[in-house]
Image (cartoon, rainbow over all chains, first blue to last red; front, side, top):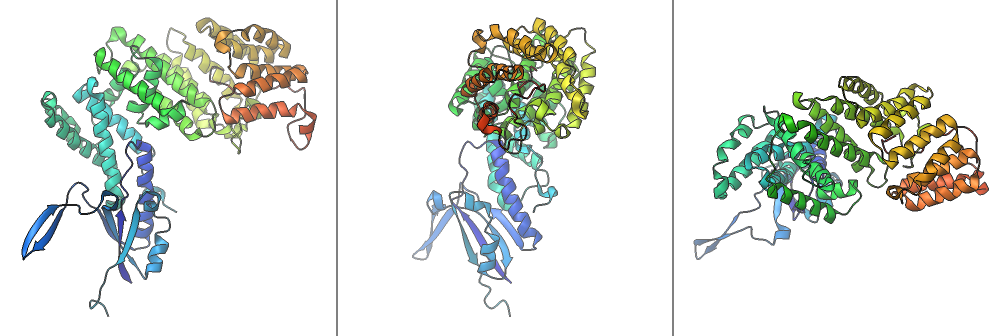
Length: 119
Length: 438
């Protein structure tokens, strides 16, 4: 069993949504995460703050700090989930009905490399 | 797939939005209703941004209250004129949750503000749905069959009027209460009527309109100040009418006439509650149009077990209603009741003069009613002509389909395979589906 990180990119809300529409969106995400959680595969999830960030680069050994986030707004990571799965195929199967696919953005899946930590 | 426990309470966001907007409006004043709405919207947006990842908090409403309070404090501190109001946000904080004492009063004050007679009727309806009901502009437009831009403009105008007239956020004083309450009931009645007319496409939205009107009626009854017989009467009317909502359209979404409906699908709960409120409505000394209309609705609801409608009583009630509310729509419905008692030609004779009434010009239910009556009278050619006129005037797709089907039944070609379609069958027909004025 491996660990996978699902990043949600560029899925910011369209402005002016009604309360009922917002509740529908939340309900969809809730349905999806509940499904993963019930299968015992959800390790966690967090939202990242959208309005701030720092990018630190080393320049001749000294840190140079700029305000982030570093990417274009349509690529900003809004948040992530950490899940457990046997393979990429299984993760992709779990993502078939992911509500993030209904938005304008994309989901990025990366497997956590556990090299050396497992038998 | 998902267990019920994993669902958010129905309409949670809408209702929390309405309650929070009311509470915040009390703090910042009705002139800053916009600010209250913005703050609440921001809180809801925060939830949509965070909950997908973090999960839904244990107390979702409390979470929203806490975030809204935080946002409100932020805004208040930034505006010098509002800074002294920071302390007034205290109560919102105490529980961080809905159900705070005084919250119900805030909601009532909000309803009275939104339904203030100083606002236009369209403005009152739109603002009530927006600020009290938590509906979005697009949803209001869909429910009221108009464009979002038109609703947005109504809202701007209504808020401008609130500022210009310095309307207050309060329960009206005893001397004004009756008049102000009348204006509130009128808005609820209009919202309900609007929602009750079966229109396809936005059927859910429109059912939500009925539901919202009923909810606000119940809200009024929770307070001793507004627990008046007329409110019971209106709620009785709305409940008795809405009991038929599940049966008013068939599987294809087509409108069914009263006599075609499967009565086992009428909501018995709504009927029973409606009768209870009708009883409580009888305690007053004044008979309002709501009383009479509820009594008429009760005549129909009483047939839930398959009995026949007491048309003589319905007719007598329409006579009474016509005195209280002399409108051509009431006259139209009275003529239909008359036709049930004295035969179709009596109804047609009464409807004749109405066709020249300006208020009914383009109102599809009039030719539709005439069509049904001519059909019963055995004049198929006239009936078909009436149905076609009605079809052209109908505002909604299912109504159009209904009328087209009625007209088609009269043509020989349509006889094949329509179970209930034998042309010109002489059995008595109920009146066509119509607004709750019936």
